[in-house]
Amino acid sequence: MFRKIIIFVSVFFFMTLILFAGMMYLKNEVEVYSDGGISLVIDKPTFFTIAEPKVTEQGSDITYEHDIHLLGLPLGKYTLVERTLDNGVKLLFEEVANTSWMPYVLSLNLQGLAEGKLKSWNEEPIPRAEDPVYGMDPTTNPLGTVEWNGHELLQGNLFVSRNLTLGNGDKVHELRHEITDFAFEDGVIQKNFWLPPKHKSQSWVILSTEALFETNGKENEWIEFAANNRQQQLNWLTPSGPYVKLALTDDPRTQLAYGLVPERTKGQTYKEWNETSPSLFFETMALNSQINQ
Image: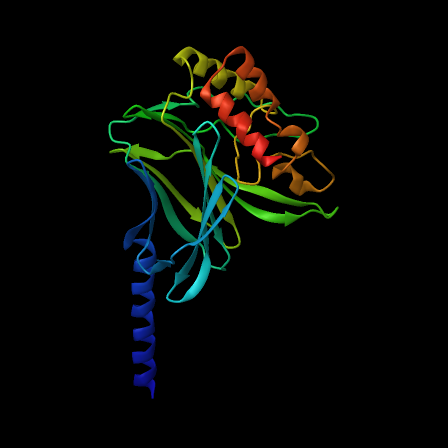
C-alpha cells in the first residue's frame, strides 16, 4: 500500500512538473489578425488553446472573440476589435480577460514591421503633480510611433486592471499595472505580461498608411503637451471609450480608479489642435471620440 502511495505521488509530481514546464517554458504562437503585411500573434503556453473566433460586426467595428482553455478548462477570453474610421485609419483594441483563479503569462505580438523605426513618446520623465480632485495619475504617454515601409502606427501601452464596485455603488476599473517596456526587435513589438486571476489586460494600436503628423516638430509639440497636461490627453483607449482617472472619494480604492467620463472624453482637445495644427493623428482621435459618444 505504501509503495502504491509513493508511485501515485511520484506520478502526480512529474505530471505537475510537466504541466508547469508547459505553462512557463513551452510556448507556441497563434495568429489572430493580419492585414497589409502586419499580423497580431498570441505567444502562449503550449497547453493553452485559443478557440476559433466568434465574429460580430456593428457599425465601424468588427469584433473577434476567442475563448481560452487549458486542457478543456476555461481560462478566459481574448477579444480583438478592429475599428475603421472614415479617414481610412484603423484602431485595433486587444483585451485578455482572465476569468479563472490561475495567473498566466502571455505575449501579444505585432509582427511585420521590418526595418521599422520607433520614436518614443516617453523620452522625458512625465511630470508628477498631486491633483486636488483626481489625485495622482501614474500613467504615461503611449509607447510611441513606428514608421515602416511608408506606413505608420502609434502603439499604446498595456493596462492591467480589475473591476471594482466602490462603496457608493459605482463600478470602476482599478489600475494594477501599466506595462510600457515592450521589446521592439526584428520588426516585432512584443507585449509580454502576467495576468492575475480575475483581471484583464487592454492595449491598442493606431494603424495608418500615411504619416500621423505633418512634421517631426509637430509630433514633438504634442508629446510635450500630453506629458504636461494629464487631464487633456487620452492614453487608455478601449472600444467603449477612453478610461480616465476618476475623482477621489472617501473610498481609498479611488486612488487608482479609472472609468468612462463622457464630458472629459469628447476629444475637444484633439479638435482644437487639429484646427491650429492639422494632422492625421488629431483627426483620428477626434473621429474616434465621435464613435464613443
